[in-house]
Length: 346
Image (cartoon, rainbow, N blue to C red):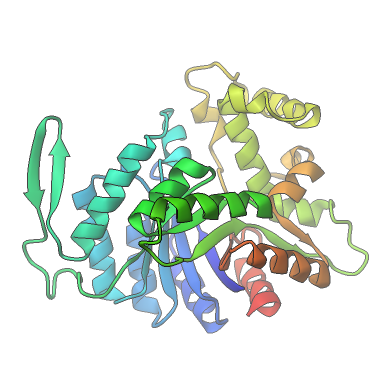
């Protein structure tokens, strides 16, 4: 299985991209959450100039964040800097919208957005909608301005069949966050293939997770393991705290962790401004005082923690479920964590 890295946009990100390339990692991704982290197009522009062959991905943008013309301009501009190396993840905007206190967009809107991006980034004309007005648009200048010749890879963010069906109809790959259940991946791939109806091949699937290789005698639920995986656990708890219907489906221990998180952040599940309390430090290294919220059940569900042999066995199972690449976010010591990932999978 291939290995890649996903990070938040910040100054110096290009140094991490250069190191990831030196280690032989396949791809380097940057999150797109405008009010949480820096801008991915700016970050990946720096990465494009600092590298020569590693693939560069946005994980993920959304029609609820950017218009198709603006997103296509950014993508095609990146493609001019790193021809044929760009991957664009698209989704309904679950994280990026919730951090604004808003709801994600619909699968239908996502599909229209994806289709428009595919057309524009390939130099084709597409319909641009604003209210009841529709206009045909295309890039008016290409060549040295943007690159619409080299292909851009598109992947749809999916946790369920609706988004997977969008991927099938649009001929894209899949990307999912913390989904380690092989059965769930088989279902996603079935939904994608059914929607594709044999008109597309079998594009790549990417899994965002965390990996922690245990040292000899190390506690799999100790502080080091919790620090390496806590950003994923806290992201799920924040989502549950922001979405009571989802929280109700969790077990008693997880629901208690949600309650403690709300208390600790000084908000409630119904407070209209709860997103301003829940999402600071989102997807960054957790504070030591929050380690108790990183439950073993969450670690086991969202992340890969174990000995080298344990991890390789789980990776093989995921590969058999159709996953082509693991994307890992380093949060403690990125150069060291990337080297460990490369040693495990490259």
